[in-house]
Image (tube, rainbow, N blue to C red; front, side, top):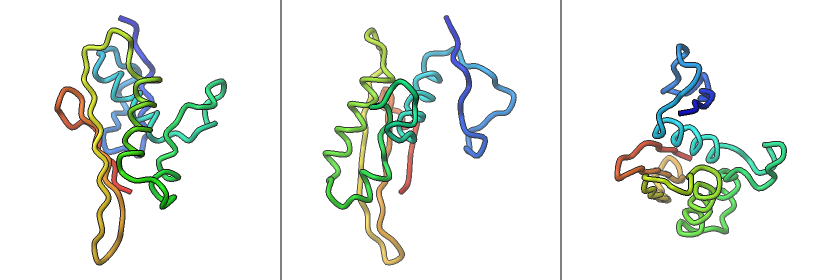
Length: 120
């Protein structure tokens, strides 16, 4: 199996400085999803539609949870999943409001296991 370059941000909680490449399919998929989620459209040369623009989607005050979920799922299907995938992906988007702040929580599940959680 061909490995992918380990591209996790050094500020990430899960960053491991000893890893240079990943070769197992699940780790590759998680890294691809993270890159897709946290990229803005136009950031990747040659792929103008790559990226979720999460900040714009969540803080635009125009889109609801279902629309944001659909946009995330379409990005994952287009840029992350191989055609012969054995992984099932589920995306949960939940807006919340507390006395201190308003925000959104995005959870990504692969084969019913939560692998990515993002708080905005």
